[in-house]
Amino acid sequence: MLAEQRQQQILDMLASRQVVKLKDICQQTNCSASSARRDLQLLEDQGALVRIHGGAKAKHDLQRELDMTGKSTQNVSAKDKIAQLAVAKIADQEVIFLDAGTTTLAMVRYLQQKQHLTVVTNGVLHASQLADQGIRTILVGGMLKNTTKAIVGTKAVRDLQHYRFNKVFLGANGVHDEYGLTTPDPEEAAVKQAAFAQAEETFVLADGSKFEAVSFVKISDLEQATIITTDLSRAVFDKYSRQTNILEV
Amino acid sequence: MLAEQRQQQILDMLASRQVVKLKDICQQTNCSASSARRDLQLLEDQGALVRIHGGAKAKHDLQRELDMTGKSTQNVSAKDKIAQLAVAKIADQEVIFLDAGTTTLAMVRYLQQKQHLTVVTNGVLHASQLADQGIRTILVGGMLKNTTKAIVGTKAVRDLQHYRFNKVFLGANGVHDEYGLTTPDPEEAAVKQAAFAQAEETFVLADGSKFEAVSFVKISDLEQATIITTDLSRAVFDKYSRQTNILEV
DNA sequence: TCGCTAATCAGTCAAAATCATTCAAACAAT
DNA sequence: ATTGTTTGAATGATTTTGACTGATTAGCGA
Image 1 (tube, rainbow over the protein chains, first blue to last red):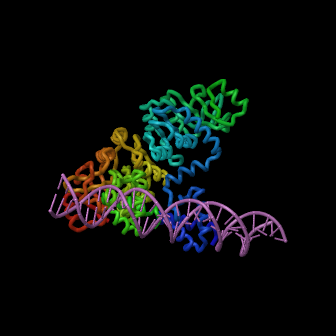
Image 2 (spheres, rainbow over the protein chains, first blue to last red):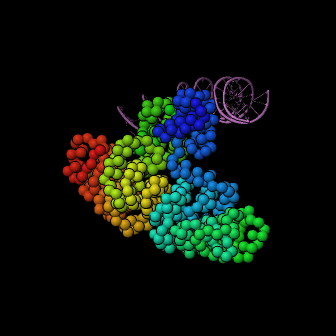
Image 3 (cartoon, chains in turn orange, cyan, green, purple):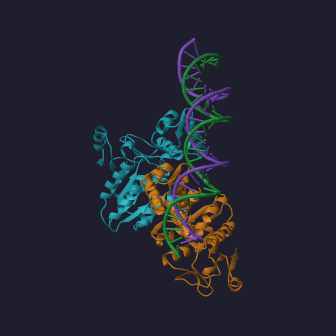
């Protein structure tokens, strides 16, 4: 039996029952314990299952999705560094807003350090992970965008108008001196704007590749936000820091 | 049996009856008293149960907590059958509400058969899976309950008052001729009530074990809902069908 | 209330099972 | 042939297990 077949069979077994014993794998696939262990190791690294003593257990959908979205994106280390710097700006007891997006998602695991936070978000994945970490979480209501699992629409925008945030953290796909902060989706842009309007202080998380780029819909001008970024060339840094606050990791 | 499996089973047993004896654990899982004790110790440290002389007792919302993390393996087939019958009651184009709970979660995968549904829910897990299936989904706003990933609180209740549902599907932990429909958590009960009030027609999903049981907070009387269930004894069926509509799988 | 008994408990220990790691053999592809 | 990959066996380390110990507890009858 081929290695891939074996691994597929392990996943199949996990799908039907919740756990598999190592012995069962050996028996089913007719291989040695060593090979079975290797497969389990591999599949765990891929985030497809969780190894336990004596075998493995299945992950839940949301769990799997979370570390998929975490790993599949590029610039993982850059995002992570940006996220850490962003979290460092937060004080205990504050009320913050987290935009739905992968960079803000990276912030979540570091939020555990903080005490008595209240986090408002429009990201379903964000909310789920925040809940797992025992953080007081408020989810905005409204239509769910199926692709990104972000809550959008007029309901979401109106909900946001009832809150006031100490700090707001947004992702942006384009950062440009003339066209400001931009993002591809009009509905998500509206949510970002609404959060922006309720913020005492706004931080935009954007790695170096987003600079000088323009996306479809404008969120706001540069001046009103602090941009947290990384890997910026000297020239670009100088150019933009004349217009706005830039924090580089 | 693997250690984790054993611990899972202990929690399952606790969820259905309120207490377990050490002996029962040994018998059910076919392990020594030492191992059973170790498991209880571990689970108590995790805060999942309270140890008592001779065994352990459940914490209050263990049932729902277990359910919602998807870890419960109890009554899977019964839940699935109930879910299918419930979905069969839905027509294309309708607007429905799904309560946060395992049985309603089981409905989600069958909803794909229907055309142009709009689904409103207060369950984050439900919403996520609905989005995966490309179903138009609206998530209620409000506080996230960390253990069950259900959205609760006054915000959620008020949100619901703006909608009107063709059909509402609720889970309940207790179905009793005198005390009506009951559930353990007051906040979730409030959400259920709010959904109830906006429904043209309400269905309560409850397997046979919930009958004659009373939980902490009352949701409503029996008369106003149709109860979808399974595995009911003749006597119980007759008794309750005098008071309300009962659909048995 | 008091003591008594039987059951249950926490802690220790050695045996058994499982684990990570290494290594050589088998195999496939150039 | 040679290189790289996969496999299964072997190793010692780690974890889990069940039995055993004396201490603690609940229940009961006086």
